[in-house]
Amino acid sequence: MNTSRARRTAVRVRTAWGDVWNDLRDDETGDVPGWVLITLMSAGLVVLIWALAGPALTGLFERAISSVNGI
Image (cartoon, rainbow, N blue to C red; front, side, top):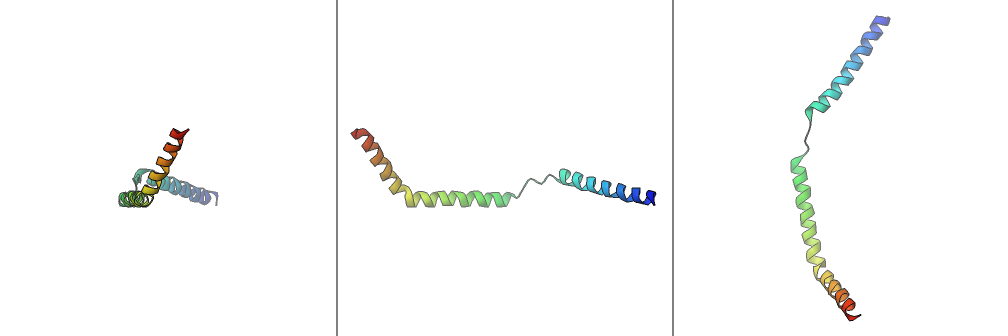
């Protein structure tokens, strides 16, 4: 009984370490097309926000500078 239990424990330990080793060995570098898509979508959002808010931000900046110059 003790020998059987020791074997089961050894198999479990070996399997667990095998799983850890396989995870480390595979070294998945990531989903490149997904990161490209995220980057392109982020750039698109920046362009869209800039196009919509650009004139308002420019006016706000010019008013702030003119008020500082007026002091």
